[in-house]
Length: 337
Image (cartoon, rainbow, N blue to C red):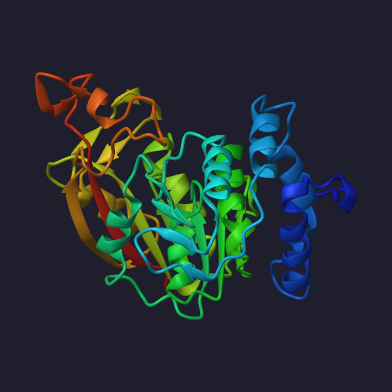
């Protein structure tokens, strides 16, 4: 665990405002110990030495044109804002945002620039929004949040504070591109993993982990880490790849699945329930199970690399290119007693 505090002037420039806001809000709360080590974690997470493309992404962020947001949309399927701009300004905006390619989660609409992301993340949100405890007034943690699309939807649902964590610098800068215009307090995407947080930090009313569990060699360790961030009676929202089968069914693809690396364990929904029980959760519910379609995850002008279609067997779309069952995903909720 990192314990030193780095002077404020060494903070990555994109996160100076986050640090000041979090320090102000958290200094007299249980989060104070964590806020003291955030500068060092920020500097590690946004290090140009570690991430060679970071300088190029920073140039793209710096080239965003000045636009005043007339109306912010957090509850629309395309998160974003509207405003009156010239065609030249809109072109400049689109070019700057394209400099942050690839865009995985979304979609977004920034003053008429429609960022058509690889994932229709709004579909996932629609599956869970009415099945979870209301977020109004809650402090929320979103683990593996990507560029923060769902964080914005959580804020739009009334959350008092939303903290997203993700170790990918590009996603952090994509979030900052949105925040450059939306200017909403109480929402932050921080460049780190769940494991970089304090082990015991039971202060969040709702914790989301969507698309992370199967990337962990030890799923129980991940579930315990999530549990330790929940306040008593807090709710976990867990979304993960699953397979069909009984309560013992488990697929172990040995690190490679649908062209994704670092994929280790895909449980059946019933086995996921059992894991949650073993981790000490209660009130466990499966709220959705379904196959991922080629309309939900696909290549677009904003994500031009291979996507789900190329990851499936061209002769049998029910199988991945490796011969495993094609992606199915489940959403489960559970509570910390």
